[in-house]
Structure formats: C-alpha cells, structure tokens
Image 1: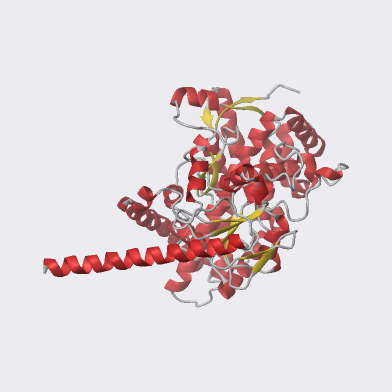
Image 2: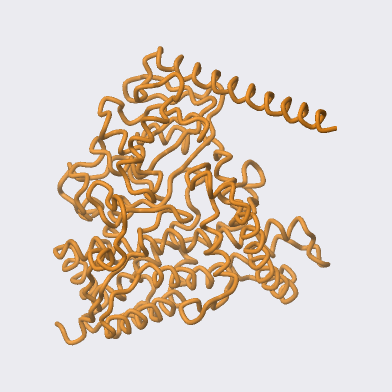
Length: 533
C-alpha cells in the first residue's frame, strides 16, 4: 500500500512539474517571439523572464510599497521602453502588457471593451464573493449596471448633499477634538470612518455611525481587505497561511449576517415598490417574486451591497488624506482654495454647512476645489484597470506598432500614466491650475484621456459623481478650519522602521490594502484656525 501511495505521489508530482515546465517554455517562447518582432520589453532572461528585473526594483522600494509603482520604476530605469511594453513575471502572474499611453488605454477600455482580468475576481472574492458589479461581465453586468445607474445620477447626488454634510460635520467635530488635543494621530482612520458613514447613507439608507462606535460587519469588511490578493503580491507565505481561509470565512459570515438582516427588513417593508434610489432599494425593486427571497438573488444583492460599501469608502478616504497632504505642502494652493470657499460660501465658516444644505447646487460653483481634487487623484491614483487580452486584438501605439494582447494581462497602470512626463509637463508638481476651465497655459492642459483615476468608457466607476461630491464637501467644510502638518518624522522616531521608507523620495507612499492607501495610517498633527481671519 505504501508503495502504491508513493508511486501515485511521484506520478502526480512528475505530472505537475512537467506541466509547469511546459507552460514556462510556452510563455518564455512567446515573449521571445514578441521580442524578435521588435516590441519593447526590459532585458529578457530565457530562464527567469523579467523576474530578476522586478526583484531588483523591489529591493529598491519599501517592502510594503504598492505594486502599481512597478511601471513607473521601469520607465525610469529603461527610458527607451516607451509607454507600452511587455513584462514577463510568470509564474507570479500572466505575461503583462503594461500600458501607460492614454490613447492605447482608450482602445481597450473605451473603443472596445476588453473583459476584466480573472485576477480581479480573485482579488474581490474575499470581500464581495465575486458576484458584484466590478467582477461581472456581459449581460449580467449590463443588467446590474442599469439597475444602479439612477442611484448615482448628478441630480440624485444633489439630493444627497444634506445627508453627506451631516456626516462631514461629525468628521469636522472629530478633527476639532484632535486639534484641541494637540497630539499626533493617524488621519486615515478618521477619513475612512467618514467615507463609510457616507456610503452607508447612499447604499443602505442607514446611519452606520462608524464615526461614533464600531460596527461588527464594517470591522469584518475592513479586516477582510488584508486577505485580498490579485496574485502573489502579498507573498506566498500569506497565501498559503491556513488561517487565511478561516478569517475569510468568518469575516464573510459576519458581513452576510448583517446584510441579510437589512435586505430582509427592507424587502418586507417595500415588497419591491420603493421609490428610493438607495442601492439596497434599487436592487430590491427588480425582485418582484413576492415570496421569500431566493438564494440566487440574495447572493447577487448581498455581493452588490458589499462592493458599494467597499469601493464607496476606499478611494474616497485615501483621496481625503492625500488632498490634505498636498495642501499642507503647498500654502499657495491652500490660500487660493480658502479664498474660493470664502467667495462661494461666505466668510462665516460656521454657516457654510447651512448654505450647502439649503442650496446643494453650490457644490457646482467650486471649480478650484474640484481642480485640487483632480490634481490629487493624478498624483495619487487609487486603482488601476487590469483587463484580459484577446486573440486577434492588437493595440496600436503612436508609432504604428501593433501589440498582441493574447495570453496577456493588459494593465492600464494609472499611476504610471499620471506620472509620465510624456503626457504631463512639470509632472511631479502639484498644480491644480491644470484642471481649471480658464487656464491660459496651453502647455498645462491635460491631454485627452490622460486623466483617468475613475477610468472612462462603459466600465468607468459608477460612483464618480458621488466621490467628487463628497470630496468637495469635505474640503469646503474643513479647509478653512484647520492647519495641518504630516508627522512621519515623529512617527519614525517612535516606531523606528527598518529598511527603505520612501518611493522616489516620497515618505507618504502608497501601500496595498484593498486599493492604494497611505502608509502607516498617515500620521499627522492638526491645529484649529478658530479666531484667525
């Protein structure tokens, strides 16, 4: 019997190794064929592909730096690559076609829609279960997108301004307490709680009150982020950790318990006849069975609730952090922003909330505030767009070269795009004037398709209008109230981090925790401007 088991194990191992080696040979041969066609890529090793190149770059970065830095680091090391090139990191990932050319990205995100790469579902599965708007394709995706579109229309966003202002006022009061306290604190935690409370109002029509007290299912959602992985970027040890699957199961159990309760309560109240445009009601309105909610619909509805809560807080909270970081480093911009708020909302800061609630259209009269947000998202984009290449689908660059996408993860890397001097003059400067309608400097005007933190095309982020509205309200109600300073030096002196802690000289670099987040929770100090004119 032992001999039989040993023989079977040997056969399985041999089969696995043979298949692994055969696939390695196919992929390396494919990359070499692309190289012979003159298509750009870093120096390629027949045995290791580009793994050694990537490892060298990784050693020069902080160990927790976000993976989207890779594209721009390669641009800096190999300037002749151009904005579109291949990268062979198999078996860590599929062969990649890295794209930081706005016109090339438009070809597969706008002109023709390549499907999301399967890694997106792998990444989202621990958080949503994979039946959410971000993971779905084809007619199922079109159905759910149509269902939820009314909840994110510009008109509906204006109706949400009073409830968003209410949550921002809690945030403002919380920051006032921190300013009076005078101690260093982690700013991201407060921005994150604000963003969750806002999306709770929009998605569930519920006051989650995370800014006031912990919520079990939100805590489970936040814990679940650390187990989300596109591939091996979190490390093989984490991926094979048996406790990973227990934590994923337990967090999902907690989330489902609370979401199911809300779904059932809302369903029993409305029976599919609600005129509300909250996400939960829009979902229930398409279900008109009249009896007990079936398992299939519940699975999809539950997944949609999770993705909206996750996506609705993740990018917004990060952008709040980086907007304040950049404003604190650029007093000229901050002064100009405050002048706009004085002019539009009046010099009495205490009445700003009241004015916005009584006239939500004032949000549309803050062009410089919007420009600050856009420039923040240019310098610190939160997400990228990975797609699955298709047989026969070629990208064409500005020189007329054609790039096959078959077998490839086609990766629109927004960080690489937004930091490429080909598209952005004075690329590392914080210049909101780029996005002002009355900007007279033609050299600063963004090129078409070059700014895409929310992507363009049919699969552009459905929550773009909500995110921009929320961000404008946050700045409008806090920028005149506080002075702000980053406290990384103080944090480092206390925690004594080991190894490299900057990316291109930036201490507030981004790490992966769901999407891109500021490292170390973004330590800051704040002071109140009460009494200043």
